[in-house]
Length: 395
Image (cartoon, rainbow, N blue to C red; front, top):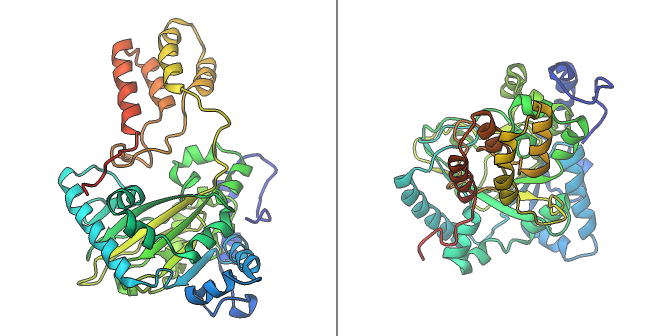
């Protein structure tokens, strides 16, 4: 991610750090097929690769060169790569689609709640489709995720040992579009939260994950495939800009969309400005399996039982005469302040982009002078909502 468009020596980005002229110049840059070695064609600055030919390269001495080209596109050029027929056996796609549709029907009866950046209701989500598919149909899961091109592009951006997660998004005819956004990590925070992170955190957030989407049906432009803004991932203060009305307006005036065929997979930087499109078709239930792949380097050195620590601290924090700053310091040293990872089925993002973290719960409990008994109940619920479920689909 480019550092060229830093606009001040201050350690934090603000709205004043977001010059529109710089952004407009950046997104006007084009990418051509001559700029790349392995891409067969480029449309709207999005390089398109045949997964079959990619397989040949991956088994040759040019493997690392291909991975380097993908990393170059994702980080320093348009930020988007399209793999045609990443899953070539379409019968596998159809079988998985059938599984997902059954899950959706079952889960609609319980209606577990929120969604990120879009309406719940006309659209459907399956949180943790990765585990649900694997536990209910392990053989089908293996056939589905045996794509070498998908594994390779994850390695190209994140290196080996990356961590796969996936969530299904089904947008029915009439389903409304998402708002323009960037993605996890900083993209899942409010504007004030984003501004509390120093510049270097903004710059590194986009290299901690990779976004992908596997098409489960043919998707015309009318059906609303993902709206993408090439080069926008290179705008350093973009996690703030993506939430500003004027930049969302620029996005709506300049985004591009590509039609997808069943089995295609599109990958892009999580820092890219993007949004699911409106399904204006009459008969296309637009289903994609969204892949959110994480770097293996986001883990702590030790395993800490922070729940027990918080439980022991709460009565003490109520009795001590600590200043607000001192209280914040104690909470920061003890409680889990980050709301992820979580189980989005039982802990959905209702009323925001994330649920209440353990640290937020502790701070709220002290502020409200919650009883120890009530706090222990709330702490238990906070903990249990985040637990993975062992049996998420009946076999």
